[in-house]
Image 1: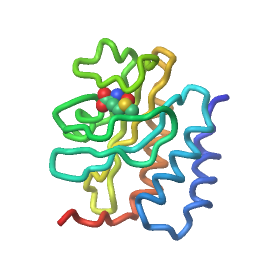
Image 2 (image 1 turned 45 degrees about the horizontal axis):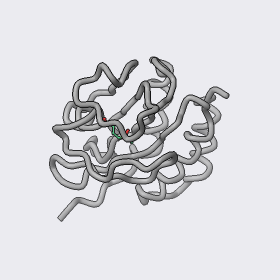
Image 3 (image 1 turned 90 degrees about the horizontal axis):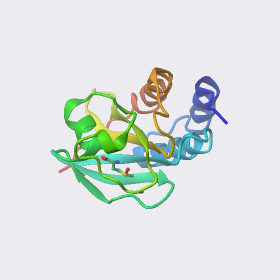
Image 4 (image 1 turned 60 degrees about the horizontal axis):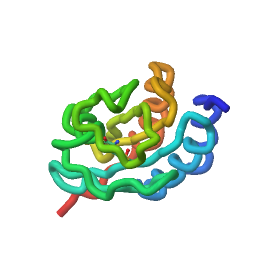
Length: 157
Ligand code: SME
């Protein structure tokens, strides 16, 4: 089954209408994305909890590592550069963090709030090589903008 991004975006918009809590939003987004596409074997968020640190958020799939410094992993690159990471072969990505040995490819998108600050990254792993392409970048980016573009993150004290 392959995701229909426009339909999934409509479902998520309906389910999250009026919601501004980013954890509730993340849990809903992850649930709808994960079950919409057979390529998505791990779907989750890592939240920015300190200037250079990510901590796991809502996810679906096997256990994920709890913390990722911005200096490490595909998620760390996405968080510190603010750029989407489209990884066809995780074994060829320097510093890739393998939460599951079955993972072959990965896409990671920075998630920005209404102020444009990066509040998290969305990480999707696939057991299929080169599973993701620009259609996923566009579809996922639009959902992230729709859902989190109106969230004002609670500033870390
Ligand atoms: N692969 C990610 C780590 C998160 S686990 O895949 C859920 C990375 O390299 O940052």
